[in-house]
Amino acid sequence: MKAMNALFVLSAAALMSAAPAMAQQDSNGKGPNADGKGSTPAAAPAASPKTSEDNTATATMPAIEIQYFRPQDQRGLNVFEAPKHAGVAYEGFKLNLGAAFTQQFQALKHSNKADPKIVNNVDANELIKIGNGFNNATANLYVNAQLARGVRVALTSYLSSRHHNETWVKDGYLLVDDSPIKSEALENLMKYVTLRLGHFEVNYGDAHFRRTDNGNAMYNPFVGNLLMDAFTTEIGGEVYVRASGLLAMAGVTAGESRGNVTQPENRSPAFLGKLGYDKQLNSDLRVRLTGSLFSQAKSINNTLYAGDRAGSRYYYVMENTQATESAQFTSGLVNPGFRSKVNAVMVNPFVKYQGLELFGVAERAKGRAANETSERTWNQYAGDVVYRFLPGEKMFVGGRYNVAEGDLTGIPNKVKVDRMQLGAGWFITGNILMKGEYVNQKYHNFPTTDVRSGGKFNGFIMEGVVAF
Image 1 (cartoon, rainbow, N blue to C red):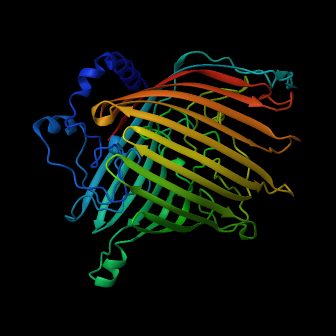
Image 2: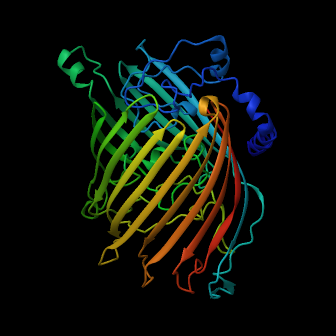
C-alpha cells in the first residue's frame, strides 16, 4: 500500500502542469456541491440538469444513495453537521461502502536549544535526526446503511494509521432525521430535529469538520490540524434542532473514548452544547457563526485534546533520539493534559464569499489532571484564509496562523506555541486531491531542561488524497 500511494503522489505531481486544461472539464462554473459554490448550506437547492460535459466531469464521483449524508469527496467541503435535507428519495434499504487514503512526502527540519539531560547514558534532549521521505500511508473504510426512511447507521474504520498499523474501529452510530413510523406528529417534529446515538466524533466546535481524519484529508485545505486538536470519539447521544438557519444542539456522553464501568466514583458524564446560525444569504455569500461548549467534572482519561489516535501529520518533529513512530504519534501537537476535569468553550465564525473562505477559532479551556489540586488554563486562536478558483473551485491557495498559550504541569511559567501554514491544492477530480504545505512552528518560554526549549521546525509537505 505504501508503494502504491507513493506512486500516486509522484504521478499527481507530474500532472500538475495539466491543471488549466483539466479544469475546463467542469461545466457552467459550478462547484462540487448543488449550490455551485463549493458549499452545502442547511437547505441546499436541487442540482441543475446535467449537460453532456457535466456528465463527464461528475462521472468520477459516486452517486449519493444515502439520505442526510456528507460525502467523503470534494462535495463534502464546508459541510459541517450532516445536512438536514434528505438529498435523495428513500427507496428502501441501501448499503454504501466508501474509502479514503493519503500519502505524504515530508521535507521538514527541526532544532532546539535545550540543555543536555542524560538519562541511562542517553541525552533525552537531543533531537532525532530526520530527513526527506515518505510517511506511513493511512486509510479509512466507511460503511453507511440506510435502515429506514431518514434513519442510517455509520461505521468508520481506520485500516492503517500512524499510531495503529492494524485495522481498528473509529466510530459507529445511528443518525435519525425522519420518523420511521407513520405518524404526522413525529414526521412534523423530525422536519427540525436530528438524533445521533452511539459512539461518535463529539460535535464540539466547528474545526473538527475541517480537519484531516486519518486517511481522509479532503476537507482540510492544509496538511496539519490545529495545535490543540479538539477531537475525540465518545459514547452517548446528541439532539439537534435546526430551522431557518438556526442551530441548537445538546448532548451527553460517557466522557471517555472507551466504555468502562469500573471506578464510578472517579467518572462523570460529559455535557456538550452548540448554538449557531448558518445561512446562504444569496448566491455568493454564506455566513455561519457557532459557539460550543464541553464540560466534564471528572474522568479517568478525558481525551478531548488527545483523542486523535491516528496521529499527527508531522512525523518525528521535536522528538528525541529514542522516538518511535507509534509512541510519539502526537509530534508537533499541544496537549494541555486535562485528563480528569475540563471545561472548554470554542467560537467559530465562517464566511464564504464566492471563492473566498474565512474561518476562525477562538477557544478557552480550563482543567486539570487527577493528581493536580488546581486548574490550569489554555487559550487558542486560529484564522484560515482560503481562496478557491477555476471552474468547480478545482484549485485553492490559503494561509493559517495558529497560536496556543497556557500552563503545563511541571513548568512554572506559561508557555506558548505558534504555527504558520501556507497551503495550495488541486482537485484533479472530485475524489483525487493533490496539495502541499509550508509550515513553520516555534516553541516559546519552555525551560532549558525541556526538549522543546527554543524548539522550532519548518519545511514542506506534499500530500495526495483519494476519497470516495
